[in-house]
Length: 433
Image 1 (tube, rainbow, N blue to C red):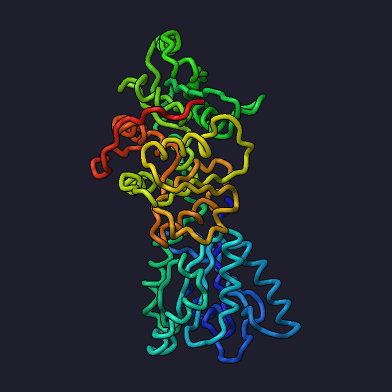
Image 2: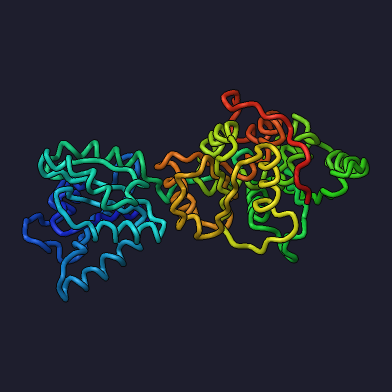
């Protein structure tokens, strides 16, 4: 059977201690260690099983700062290796002076949305005093976790391995899209289909949910709610919905709804049917199970004040018309509930290029259905490292409908207690679509 290994690369300047870190991880002389600059002429590769992580492929790369014709060839190879790696270990000797190489590695890793961890190789105890200087010279290090080692000291290995285990997310992490799906049960997909719905196909989260439910021997059934009639108080729309549910012969196990319909669905769905949203489903799936962190971000929403800044982040650049959730509906809720709060938007790559992330009280992120887990996790790492709370479209729109609505959409995911988050009454006058 083909083994899918995580690729972990060790990068840095010549003589920063990269090969010593390689040997520390492998517990053997995998790479030659010598004070002569440029000792590592080509990438050394080792296959290893790391307890708690699984099979990995380790890359000990050449120094990027070798100024020769051969050095240029080494640079080309090093950057090719960086593209292949799932985790970049940046080894830094704090006692050096020029940090152009470190800046270059960080820039490239961030451009490619790579996970990056920083290892300060402290050759002498006094070197630790220089770390503050390094972080001044390489400002993007503020977004990344750091540790200190003496790479030639084998006693540093357990702490280094634990550091990697604590902060690295393996690409082999298995995720279930809808973990509460049971065989031979009905699942309703509520798809309102507004003006932004493309003809001829479902949106990716809807198609993924339908496929997942079918693959797990259950029965997905799509329903199109007329949001306009329902919000206008037309009793026939509620009657139509209740008639639809009663037509199954037995109650559906759960309803997965478009987030924009939560103002209706939280009231129309009885407690014997689970309820959640496509956006919540996707953010849990793409973030590799970090839904609780997005829920915790609501604590910041409960304390918003005039003058605070909120960033609405959407991963894609789709054409926005009518009552778009990110540009119209969520901003309308915020302005009515928290007058004076400033709202900014980032679309696509704008998030990675935003140099003001630290200025936001809260980031509200879309479901992430059009980006990879690698890209979303890169965003999460940046926000966590600078202490900026974040939540999600579906979570936020449910929260705006009150604690009971929020309780309902989180119940399928095993997140029950929300008592630590400030009270929020049902939103009124929300944007319609």
